[in-house]
Image 1 (tube, helix red, strand yellow):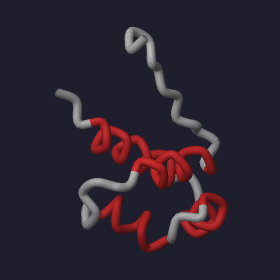
Image 2 (cartoon, one colour; image 1 turned 90 degrees about the horizontal axis):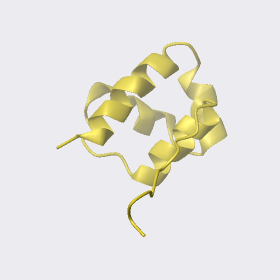
Image 3 (cartoon, helix red, strand yellow; image 1 turned 45 degrees about the vertical axis):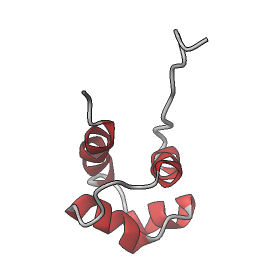
Image 4 (cartoon, helix red, strand yellow; image 1 turned 30 degrees about the vertical axis):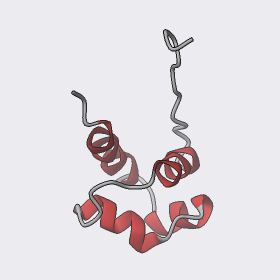
Length: 70
């Protein structure tokens, strides 16, 4: 099974390496310390809504596919 949260955090590390975490925190409404805790592994399972907001504010919106669920 995929551990999508871990995969997303790995991608997020690369994205945030090119920008300011403080700016992303301000734009997303997610606390800077919260984001830093995700990246350091202190928060194992970030809230999905917060993760979506952070990616969105980095210019990388997460797209969901619901194909096959209908």
